Length: 242
Image (cartoon, rainbow, N blue to C red; front, side, top):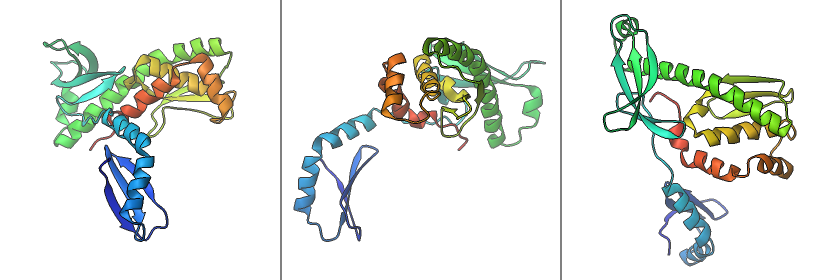
C-alpha cells in the first residue's frame, strides 16, 4: 500500500495529488478510510508513475553566486566569478576547470565592481552579464536553426524575435511572427530544435490539436522525450534572483 497524507475538509469530492514524491489525499469528512484505501489501490499504477517521475526531477536553482550551477546547452556548468584584470571589460566565457568540468567564468570590470556596495548588487550584476551572454548565443544559434527547419517543413515565419520570457520558451501569433526565449540556451541543442519545430508548426495550426501534434511528430518524432527533459529540469531552469 502506498503511503499517503490524508487531508480532511468540507469538500464534496475525493482527490489525489503527488507533490515532491509524496501522495496527498484530500477527502470529505464523511468518507471512511477503507473507501480511501480502495480508491488509492485503483490508482496505484498512476501514483507510482508520478512518484517515479518526480524523483527523477532535477531540483536545482542557480542563485548567481560563486560556485553555483546552471545549465548551458543541457550540461551543468559552475559559475566562476572573477575580477577583471587592469582595463579588461566585463564578460562571460566557457572555461575548463582543473577537474575537467566546465565553468562559466564571469569577469566583473573595475567599473562595475566600484558600484557594488552590497552582495545583492553583485548577484544582479552577474545575472545581467549572464543574460547578455545567453542572448548573444541565442542570436547566433536560433536563426540558422529556424531557417533549416523552415525549409524542411515549408513553413515560413514573417519574422523572428529573440527576447526573454518568464513562463514560455517561444510563441507564434496569427501574423506568423515567431518569438523565442534566449534562456533556451540552457536546454540541450536537440530540445532547442524541438521548441523551434513546435513554434513553426503553429504557423499551420495555431492550437494544440491532434493535427498539430501529428505535424510536430512528422518533423520531430522525439518530441515527447524533449518535453520530458524540460519537465524534469523545470526547477533548474527558473531564472530569478532569490
